[in-house]
Image 1: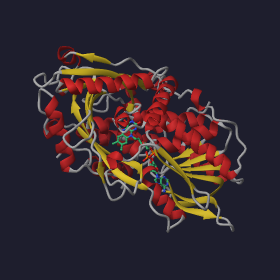
Image 2 (image 1 turned 90 degrees about the vertical axis):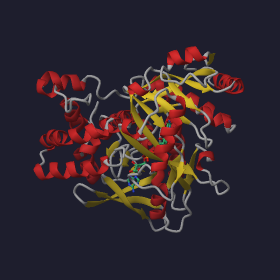
Image 3 (image 1 turned 135 degrees about the vertical axis):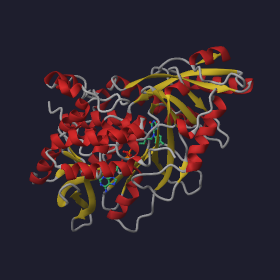
Image 4 (image 1 turned 90 degrees about the horizontal axis):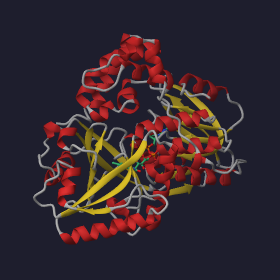
Length: 509
Ligand code: FAD
C-alpha cells in the first residue's frame, strides 16, 4: 500500500514513462480526483495534473454538505435529488471518518410555511427511502430553541427538523487522492496544463504541462484526456479550440465563519427563502458556525475569488433576522469564497436557477470536458466520465467499482505515531489553533503539501476557521516545512509573504 502522496516520485514517473497513459485528468478538484480514483480502480493507467494545490479551487470552499438538495425539490428536479440522496449514502458508507449525519431545522414565521416545508420534507423523506439519514418532523418553537439556542423566538411559529449529511471537503479530497494513489493513479500538484497536443488527424493525444516549481515543460502523451478544471473548464477548452463557445456560467458563493457562541448547539439551520429568494445555511462546523452562501454571477472565474462587501452584508443581515444576537463584521473569523462551475443556459440570466446537474461534452479533438454537478455526486460524475473516456478512446477496462471503494483515513494513526517518535511534534503551532507541529510535518511528508497555504488552508482547514490566527502561525509553519523540504530562509520569507497576500481574501474588513 502506497499511503503517501509523493510529488518527486510522481514527477519521476511522469517523466520516465514512454507508452502513452490511458488517461490524463486535468484538474485536481473533487471531480478530477474522483475520476482518477475511478479510472485507477478499473485498471487504467491514469495521471492527474493540478495547476495549484489539490482542492484549491471550488472543492475546499463548499458549504460542506452532503445532500440531496432540498431546494432542488422546489425546482421540481426529482431525479437530481434522488440520485444525490443515493450518492449521499455511498459517501457516508465509504468515508465514515469524514461524512456524518446532521440535523437541520427550518424556522417558520407562520403556519402556512410550517405546512409547506413540512410537506416538502415528507417528499424528501419519501425520495430518500432506503437512503434515509433520519425522518423529518414538525417541531414546536420551544423544541426548536432547545435545539438551536441562538434562534430568535419572537417570530417563530413552528419549525421542521430534517436530516442531511455534513463532511470535511478538503480533507476528503486529500484522502480520495491518497486512495487513488493507493490504487495506482499518479497525481501531481503545481503542474499546469498549457497546451493540448494533437496528432495528424486533429485528435488530442497529449498535453504540455509546466512544473511550476522547476519551471520545466513536460510533454505527456495519452489515449484520452479529461478536462475536469471546474470553473476553469472553458479556459482549458479554449486551449484545445480557441473558437469554442463558453459552456460555463461562473457564480460565486461567499461563506462567513463565526464563533460558536453566536450559534451554539449541534443542529444546523436553513433559511429557505431569503429576502431575495435565495437559501442560506447556518451550520456548526469544527466548533465554529458557517453562514452561507450567496449566489452572485461573475464575468469569469479567477483563482482567488474575493467576497463583495454587499455579499458579506447580506449574510450578516439575513443571519441577524434569525439569531438572538446580531452578528457584526467584528465577529467574523474568516470569509471564504468559491466559484460554482454551472452549465450555461442561454435562456436564464439568474445563476441560482441554473441546473446543478453535471454535463459531459466531447470536442471534435476528443477532449472530454466534465463540469457542473456537486461534491455529493462526484462518484457518479466520475463513473459517467470514465465510461465516456473508455468509449471515446476504445480503452480496455473493467467496469466501475467505486460504489464500494473505501476512502483511506490517511491521518488516522500516522500523526499519533509521529508524536510518539518525536514528542516535540506534539506542541501546538498557535495558542488558538487546534493543530500541532505533527500536522505540519505529516502534511509535507505524506500529503504533498508544498506551501504554507497548502498546510493552513487545505490540510488542516485553519485558514477557513481563523484567518488572523493562521496569519500569526504562518512563520512557524514555514520553518517546520522548510526543515522537512530542505529549503532556506529565502523560501520561508517568500512563503510568509505569499500567505499574507492570500489571507487578505479571508480576513474581514
Ligand atoms: P474545482 O474544485 O474548482 O477543481 C478544478 C481544478 O482544476 C482546480 O483545482 C484548478 O486549479 C484546476 N485547473 C484549472 N485549470 C487547470 C490547468 N490548466 N491545468 C491543471 N489544473 C487546472 N456541493 C455539495 O455537494 N455540497 C455543498 O455543500 C456545496 N456547497 C457549495 C458552495 C459553494 C459556494 C460552491 C461554489 C459550490 C458548492 N458545492 C457544493 C459544489 C461543489 O463544491 C463543486 O461542484 C465541486 O467542488 C466542483 O469541483 P471541481 O473539481 O469540478 O472544480
